[in-house]
Image (cartoon, rainbow, N blue to C red; front, side):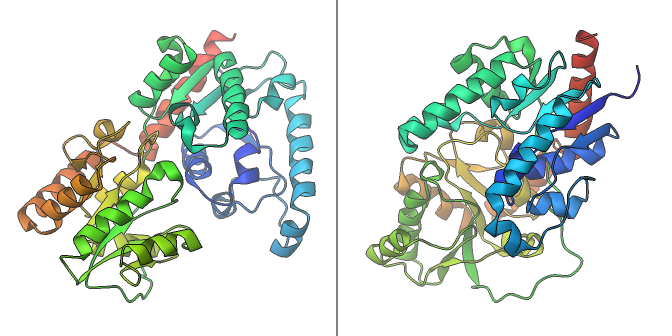
Length: 369
């Protein structure tokens, strides 16, 4: 079979400046050795810029991009539509769920990766109008896809249960991580003893219960701190910390990848309290940095972490606090979890994900001949 021509559209690179999904595409694309194209002309996505994968991307000063962002994104959409309507044959790997491309691709096949079913599983955390639009778009794109990639068995089962997709149409391909000790570490002053919370703090991420669990620990251990990455704390979060008497004990740090390694590596433990995830890349990152993982027993977590984590009920801040304490004050258990994490990490790699994704492409092209 001739080398297949694979297209990736601009969707995820239009609305993510950085993040898991855009990073995922920038990790797997160069590892597949495919004849590919990314239909992006203008983007401030950091992963796309650093990867240098996009031959069409035109650099624009940041202030100009921000001032005329909507105009640039409309140009991306028109550019994507023009390439997708070209008479050449290709396979599209759509980067998100907007169904616009269904009216452009003609008889060409497409693949969609489903990263989670959060809106469908936890609708109470999202505005009704938003979840209705996203659910309808996802349903349309997923049900009409030639093949669907799910990033965990748990996500696959959610797709089957919620959209009634045939199981044989869905391929499970796990994520990987590139997290490793940096050549040059960023200087940073950190507390002597801290637990770590990584990433966004949307409602379903369960951050409020994490803060309450930390307050229970902090009341007994005045030397313990919590460090959080992601966006700066909101005024409501600051008020929560004040009501819990943990202001000054829960610290925000804006972390680059090299600094992130240091945070994981020096933390007493990484805590992941989320109510639902499609995969949970921070679990792999904690393993790679020799940091014990203390995580929710919900959704995909037991599948991804197996016996290489300590688990708690995410709806109980008391159980969360007790589980954290059982690890961070027990050096034997900490060492055991770090060792098990390194062993579990061997199951995952971006190379494996890329190889399996390429196999999906070839399967679709063979079926579509």
